Image (cartoon, rainbow, N blue to C red):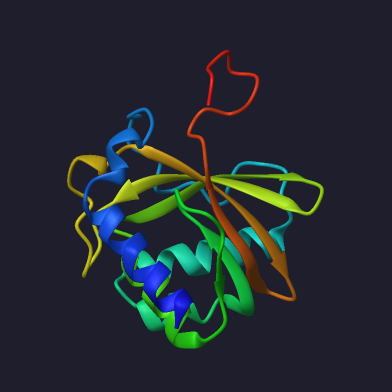
Length: 161
């Protein structure tokens, strides 16, 4: 139950405007690109892309099915443990934006994905639309074990996170 309360608080915080620092606006992505940039493996890219495509389409139940149970999410909060499919659905529903996967970089067990934010059915991305956001994933056995929002500025960019 504590996780549900934390997810509800996370949802309220996100809807209150945590997307204000969404990152830099970029030119529209080339929709005909056959693959996703970055050195992450095809399986990891496939899981992330399938998850984000489901979310962008408004299918929260399908998006939640890509999460391992238990799992961990962190989106501007302390880490939250997701233990049930309902909690995974609540977390996905709390994300105000859809997105398109642009790049996925591997560093050990971590995959850092860069997304271009979009509107989505059931969401309210607003001014975040068209900006970029980054998330670090841990993927195991085709499931998202960890989902953690990270700075929109890659380390070494000269910017402080």
